[in-house]
Image (cartoon, rainbow, N blue to C red):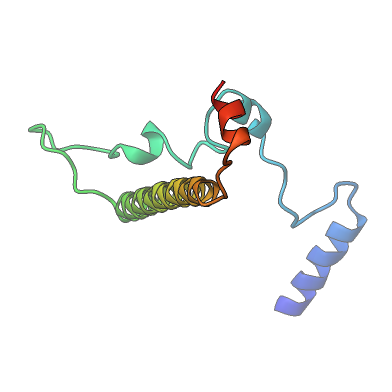
Length: 127
């Protein structure tokens, strides 16, 4: 019995003027949201996703949902990674400055080791 119904549905879809598609449609408003500094979709972050859906009648907050806990953990991980990368950049800049200072000291040292003018050249240089 299922086979005739299935063929009937398939032929009805094939002959209809409207096409059935399984492709993902474009999300409306992505351009506007990104231009206005919002998330690409309404479910990425914001009060609708971050705040609890309900609370107890006596005012106690609801326990956090799994998605909220997951997002909180992801944000914490991202924050730790940002701090670590920032520290790496700071250390790299400090090492680069030290190398620049060392190169400058070596250049001054090499300059001081050059032969000094003597005799008439020394007298001309002092005047």
